[in-house]
Amino acid sequence: MLRERRSKTEIPHNRGHLFSVLAKALKPRPITTVSSWADKYRILTSKGSGEPGQWRTDRTPYLREPMDCLSVTSPVQRIVLMFAAQIGKTEVGLNWLAYVVEHAPSPMLVVLPTLEVRKRWVKQRLDPLLNETPVIRKLFDGRRLRDGSNSEDIKDFPGGMLVIGGANSPASLASMPIRNVLLDEVDRFPWEVGNEGDPLGLIDERTKTFPRRKVLLVSTPTVKGASRIESEYEKSDMREYQVPCPHCGEYQVLRWRHPDGRYGLTHHKETGVVYYTCVECGARIDEHHKPQMLAAGKWVARHPDRAVRGYWLSGLYSPLGLGFTWVELWQKWEGCHGDTANLKRFINTTLGESWEEQGDSIEDMALIARLEEFPAQILSIAVTAGVDVQKDRIEATVVAWGTGEEAWVMDHLIIPGDTARPEPWEELEVALRDAGVQIAAVDSGFNTSMVYDFCRPRRWAIPIKGTTGMHRPLVEDEKRRRQRLRRKVKSGIQVEPLGVDQGKALIYARLKITQTGPAYVHFPRTAAFDDEYFAQLAAEKLVTKIKGTRPIQEWVQTRPRNEALDCMVYALAAMRLSGKDMSQVPTPALANPELQRPAQKKPARKFSATRW
Ligand SMILES: [Zn+2]
Image 1: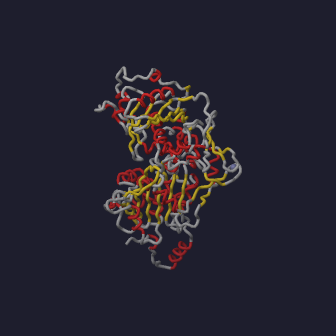
Image 2: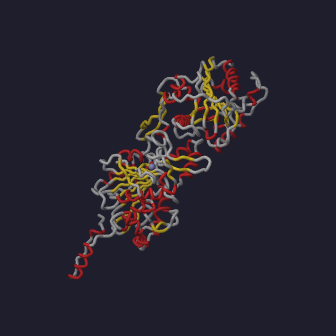
Image 3: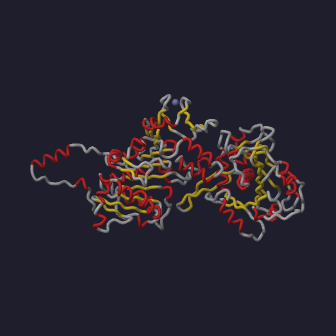
C-alpha cells in the first residue's frame, strides 16, 4: 500500500538530534490550509492564466473557504462548486492537487468528461502546474527520467500518485482505492459508461475505504433537471456569497434577476453605464465598489445542517480583470436575445445558473393580467405570421417585432373551412395582407400538398415542419441552411425544419419577462385574446423523464388544444428566417408589397423556392 510521507518518522541517534526533532514537532507547521499553501507556493503560469505570477487568494476571496474545505485539517468530505466560467473554479482544483502532491501526499484521482478532454487538460492545466511551480517541479524531476511510471494517465510522486481518467472510459477510472477525487466539468460526464452504469457511482465506490476522503465536484450548470452539478448543489448546504452594500452595509447575494423579476443590473441608456442596485436601500453600486465588497463577503448556507458543502457563484462576482465586467455581461445579455443557443450559454456559463428554469411552464392568468391598449401605430422591424393548419380551420398569429425581438402580438386569426379546399387559403391570404404581414411560416404537417400549393408561388410564405428534441435549434444556422437550400428536392419546395421544443422554451422564457423592452411580449386588449387563447398558449409543460438512466426533457400537453402556442413559435421562426437585423431601429410597419396586389388564384409567375 502507499505510505503517507508524514507518517514516516526517523529514529533519533542522539539527544541533540532528539531535541531538534521534538522542537520541529512542537512547532506548528505554518501551512495548514490549501489557501495558505497556494499563497506561499503556487505560481500561475503564463499559459493557463490571464495574470501570471504568484497566486493570491485575496484576488478572489470567495475561493478561500471552498479551498480550505479541501485542507487535511477540515472535516468536510464532499464539496460542490457550481460556478460561472472564468471566475477561478478550476484553480480551486489545481491548488488542491498541488497541495496534495507537495504537502499531504496520498492517492488522487482526477476525472475529466472524456479521454479527449483529459488530454487537453493535462496539456493546458496540469503540465504548466507541474512545470512552473518550483516546489512541485522538484518532486517530479528525475523521476520521469528514472522510470516509466509517469505517463499521460498516471503520475507518481513521493508518497502518492495522480491518476487522470475520462468519465467515458471505465478502464481509465483506476480500480485502486482513492482518497482524493477531483471531478471537473461534471455536467459533461456521460450518464452511463459501457455496462457499468453512472461513472459517478463507480468513482464513489473507489473512495469508500477512506474514512477521511475528499471529493470535489466542479462544473458550470447546464439544463435544469438534467444538470448533475445542480442536483449535487441542491443536496448540499447551498452556500451563496453575500456581499455588503457599500452604502447601507446590508449583506446580499448578487443576482442577475431577483425572484420578483427585477434585474440586478441596470443599463443607463444615455451614458451606457451599467450598475447594480442594492436590494435593501436601492442605491447605485458601481463596478469599482466590487473589490471591497468581495473582500468583505461571506458564504452563507441555506441549509447549515447538511454535511455536503455546496457553493454557487454567479459571473456577477467576477473580480476586475477576471471574467466579465458588468458592462460586458449586459452587452452579452442583449446580444443573445435573438438566439436560444447563445442565451443558454450565457445563462449556464456566464451566469452559472441552469437554463431551463424559465422555460418550464407559464401561468395563463398572469398573461391575461397584462393585456394592454396598443398605440394606433406600432413601430416594427418585421411583421410575421405563424400559420397552423388543421382539418377544419387555419389559425394564424400575427406579430410585429421591434428591437431586441420585443414582440407585439397583433392578432390571432381563426379561419374556418375545409383546408383540402382553396377557400380558407384565399381567405388567409387576404387576412395576412390586411395585417401587413411580410413573412409567414406555414406548418406543413397536415394537408401537406395544399400547404405546398399555397407556398410555392408565394415567396413570403415558407413551409415549415416541426421536429422534436431539445437539442435542435429553432431554425438552422445560416451555414447549414445554405447548404441544404443548395440541394434540389423532388417536391420543388424547400421545407424549413423547426426545432419546436427550443422554440417553446424560448417563448415561455419570454412570457415570463415582466419588464417591457427586448424580448418582452405584448398582448392587445382585443376580442381575439380571450381566456381560450391564453389557455392554449399555456397548454404545455416541460417535464424531465428518465430514459434508461439518462434524464431527457419533453414538452407535455396539459390540455387538448395548443394552436396558439404553435402559431407563436412559427411566428418567431418566421422572424428568424426573415434574416432581418433585430438590433436596428424600428420603423412604421411596411406592408408586404407582394401582398398588396390583389390575391391571385393562379400564380402569374413561378417562384423558385431554392432562392430562400
Ligand atoms: Zn444598500
